[in-house]
Length: 337
Ligand SMILES: [Zn+2]
Image (cartoon, rainbow, N blue to C red; front, side, top):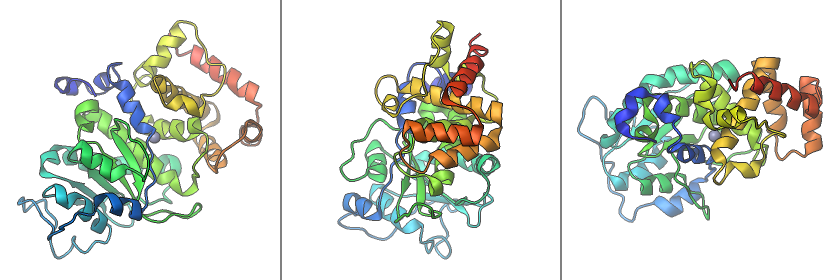
C-alpha cells in the first residue's frame, strides 16, 4: 500500500501511515455472496473453452484439475479476462487448496503458495482444525475483476485489498466449504510480501470462523480476532501493528469503551482495527488464547446488546465490563512507551 520500491522493508512499509486506511478498509469487507449474485454480474455472453496459460509447469492438467467443481465458478468469472494459472497446494486440509491468477500475477501466487501451509497451520493453532482448510484463493487481475469477484448485489465497494466471499448457500452452524479469498490486483504492491502473508492469515481466519459467525456480531470481536490470529507469532511490535493507537496512547488518550461497529468505516477505520486488535491481544495475554476463542464463539452468534456482551464477559472471563476495560487500559498504558 506504499511505494513498491520499499517492499523489502516489509511490514515497516505496510504499517506506514500513508495508505494504511486503504488496507484497513479492505478488512472491513467480508462480503457474502451467492452464486446467483456472481452469475448475474459475471457470466460472459460468449464463454468459450477455458483459456490456459502456456506455462506447462503451472497450468492445470486438463485431466485432473478441470474437473474440480470448485473451479467451475472461478473459470466462469476469470475466463473472460484472459488466461489463468491454477496451482494446487496440499496445505494440510482434506483437499488441496487452489490458487488462481492470471499470468501477470505469477509472483503473487509464488508468495501465497509459499505461505499457505504455514498460514493454515497458524490459524488452526488458534482456532482448531475443524474448518475448510482447502480454500480457493484468487488474485484478481484488475480492479474491475476484483469488484466482480466480490461484489454482492446492490452493495457498494471500497478500495479493498482482499475479501472473503461465499459462493454457495450457507446456513449458520454448518461448515461452509464454498468460500474463497479474493485479493485485489494491487494488494501485494500495497502491503508487500510480509503484509500479504499477514493479510492471508487474516482472511483465512474469517474463513475458519465463518461456520460459527453470524452477520451483525460485534466487529471488535470479529475483526479483532482475525487480526490477532494474523499477527500472532509474526514478530511485529505493538507500534508496528497499531501505529495510530500508539500515537494516541502516547498523547495520553486511553479508550473509554470497546470500539463500536460504526467506527470500522470512514476516516477513523485504521484506529478501529487497531483498537479491536489490541482488545483481543490483551484478552489473549490476560486470559489465554483459548479463552479468547471461547469468547469469540460466544459473541459471534449475531448482534449482541451491551447486556448480552456483559453477560459473556462475566461467564467467559469472570469479570464485569468495567473490570475488562480497566484491565485493557492498564495493558495499553504499559505498551504506549
Ligand atoms: Zn477482516
